Image 1 (cartoon, rainbow, N blue to C red):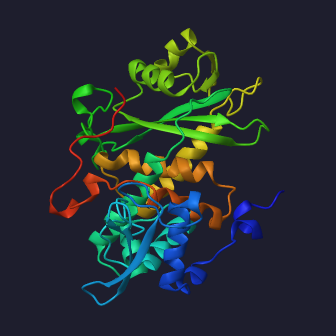
Image 2 (tube, rainbow, N blue to C red; image 1 turned 180 degrees about the vertical axis):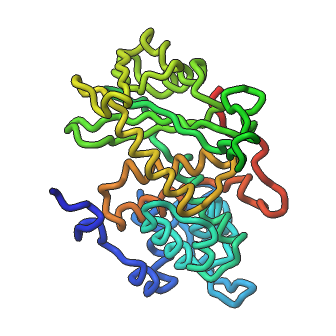
Length: 342
C-alpha cells in the first residue's frame, strides 16, 4: 500500500519552528516579495502605482519599528500591508506568518480557540484572524467552471436533535418539525484525469437538496455536457437536460459496475465533519460558506507541501483588499445575510 502523503518528506518542507525563528525584517521581506512579486519585492505605491519610493522608518505606539514608504510621485505614505487584510495590524508581521503556518499545518482545520492559545492572543483576535485567512481563500478562488467527470452530493448541518424518550420525538419528515436553521452543503468535485481522486472542488450552501437549488448550482459552476455522478436523490433529476447524469445507489454498491459513484464528494464531507465536530464543534450559518470553502481548498491541495501552501495562503492574504465585514467585527460591523444559492 502506498505511503500516505502526509507521512512523506515532501509534505513537510517548512516547520513552525523555522517561521518562529525568523526576524521581523525577514517576515517583512517575505510579505513584500509576495505582494510586489512583479518587482521582486520592490515597493509599489498603493495609491498611484509608482515604483519610485523612499524609506521612512517610524515607531508604533508600542515602540516597535515600522518600515514605511513614501511615494516620490504622489507623496503617499504606505506599508506592505496598506489596503490589505492586515492593514492597521497590531501584531508583528512574523506573528501573521506563524498564524499562517499553523493554519496550514492543521490539515483538518483549526478553531479560533486553538489559534488564540498558539499565538498567545485573546479569542476575539484569533477569531477575526482565521476568518480573514478564510476570506482570502474565497476572494482568490479560481472560478473557472468544472468539466469532465463531476461528482455531486450534499450533507446537512444543523439537524434537529431527537428527544430522549421515544414518545417525545417528533416526526422530522414533516416540514413543521424541521429546524429552520438546518442547511445543506452542496459539493461538486472534478475527478482528476489520472483517475485518482479529485483536483477541483466547488461548494455552496442551500436550505436543502431541492431541484431548483441543485440546477442553479450546477449551471453556474459546471460546463454543459459534462458527466455528473450523483447518489440518485430526486433533486438531481433535472440535470439530464444539460449534462450526462449517472446515478449510483449506495444501498447496492459504493462503486457501480460502470464506475458510477460519489466517493470523492463523500471524501470531502469526511474532512468537513472533522472540522465541524473535531475542531470548531459548532458552525454558524452566517459564515458556513467560509468554512466549507476552506475544506475545499485543503482537499484540492492535499498533495502540496506545507511550505507551498503556506506561501500561497500568505500571498492570497497580502493581496486581498481590506474586508469591511472584518474591520470592526467585534464593534458590530458584521455580515448581515448568509451566502445561499439562489
